[in-house]
Image (cartoon, rainbow, N blue to C red; front, side, top):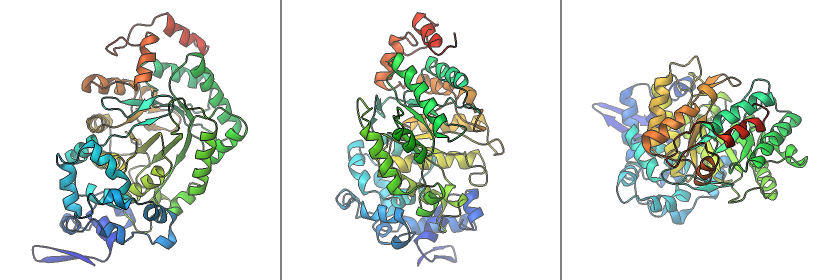
Length: 460
C-alpha cells in the first residue's frame, strides 16, 4: 500500500501497478482502461508518493507477476545489479534530480543503462516536464552499426519509407529515388508491404538490394513483414539485411503479434548468419507504440506508458540497429490529441535512451485524431533537440498505404539545417560523391550521377 496526503485528503494506492498508473500524465488510453487518476489532485498525490519511493522497490515489486509473464522474467533475470549500484540508494525523485544534474554524463548514463529497468524509466519519466525529458535524453547516446554508423553526436538519420498500396515496384522505386535525392535513407530503406506473402517480400528485398549494390549505397534495407515471413525469406535465400518486428511489453501482447522471445532470438541468429553487415551485426529493427497492449486486452491493468517501456526490455535483449515508437499511429482512443502525442513521444524516446536503445520516433497521427502538422513540427523539433537517432521520411508526409500522417523528406532537411545536424558519416560521403549535396550538405541541382540513379530504376 502506498499513500500521500494532499490538503485534508489522503490518497491510497494498493500496489505499484496502481501507483504508476495514477501518477501517469493524462491520456485517453489509461482512461479507456479504467486505470487513470480520477482527478488532477489524485495524480499529483500519486506523483508525490512515487517521488518518495526507493528506486529499489521497482525491482522488488513487479507490476506483472514473474511466474505469469516472460517479459517480467526477462527484466528480472537480465538486470545488471552492478550497473544499478550507482543509483541504488536513490528514490525515484532523487533519480530524476541526478539525471538532470551535471554528474549524469553520457559515459555514466551508458554504463547505467543495463541497470535501468522499464519500470524505473517509466516511473522517473512520470515526474518529468517536457524539457526534462529532452535534456535527459539528449545526454544518452547509443551508437549502432550495420553498413553505416547510426547515433553519433550531431547526426540525424532518416528511415526512407517508400510504401505503396499495391506493392508496385515502380511506385516504390520512385519513392526511394525521391528520398535519396533529398538525402534520406541512412537509417534504413524500409518498406511496409501491403501483403505479407513471402513471394512479395522477396521481390521487394531483391529490388532494393539490386539498387543498393549498383550504386554502392552505404545503408541497409528492410521489408517490414512479420518475423516468421522474414525467416522464410532467409530460408529461400533472399538478401535480408534487417529483421523487423513490432513488439510489446507483455507476453500476452506479444502473443497477439504472433511472436515469442524464442522466435525473435531465432530470427536474430538467422540474420547474423548471413554476414551481410560490413561495419557491425546489429540486425534487428523493432517498432513499438503506446496502447498496443491495451488494444490486445493484454495490459494486465498496467498503464500504457509503463507497458511501452517494458517493450524496450524486449528490444534491448536483441541488440537492435533501430527502435522506434510509432507514437500516434494507433489512434485517439489511446493518445487523444497533439498534446498527448507530444508527451508520449518524448517519454518514449527518453525511456528508451535511458535503457540503452537507439531510439527513433515516427512522429505521426491518424486522420481522426485531434492533431495536425503544427503538432508534428513541435514534437519533431523537440525530439531533434533531444538527440533522436532517426525519424521517418515519407513522400509528402502522407503514407498512401498505411493511411496516416507522418514526416517528410523535407522535414528531415529542416531539422538538419535548423539544428546543424548531418546524416550518418558513410552516407554523407556517398551523398557528396553522387553530387546530391555539397560540402555543407546543401542539396545540389541534378547532375549526371543523379540522373544515372534515376535511370537505374527505369524512371528516367
